[in-house]
Length: 212
Image 1 (tube, one colour):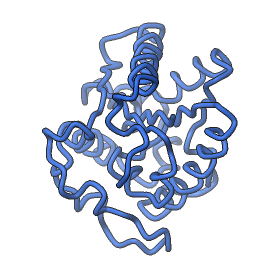
Image 2 (tube, rainbow, N blue to C red):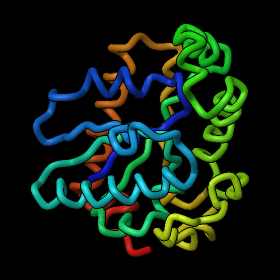
Image 3 (tube, rainbow, N blue to C red):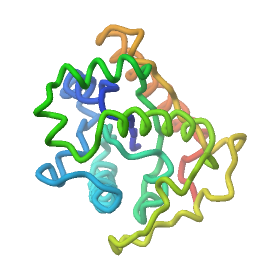
């Protein structure tokens, strides 16, 4: 399976990633930034990186290993990537936090960090707000991620463009890292993974062997 742990900057993805690495030999843990680490992220680079990670997920899948990918990639964007249909099961979790906590966390990173990034504080807050609505409803402002596709990856937006919030295939777990300690966030992520693995093993996971 592929477990997508997504969220705007400041939500705690890197902290969770570091805490979970090496804890489960059947779960590879990676950060999307490992691809194009020296480039500013954009919609184009995310599309390209998503496809690279999905192909790696297929390799892990063939060896009996699941992949937990921490990324800025929204659920709908990952599902639309060409190789997403090759994954036996995909589950998504939005790691989120209140706006004021996000601002506080990003401010603590210092002015130099913000100067190196392509966005502003307002951008990260708005990106987080959009992700909250996207997690609940695939029809919420899809143009935000369905811009021009110049990457040559031929995104398959039609896979889910007809889905609405009631579609059982659109399932996004939401974990609020703002009200939990690091250990509690990690425990919540691990519990979510185990629930999704159980659904997949019993054949009732909505994206188990899905046919887009």
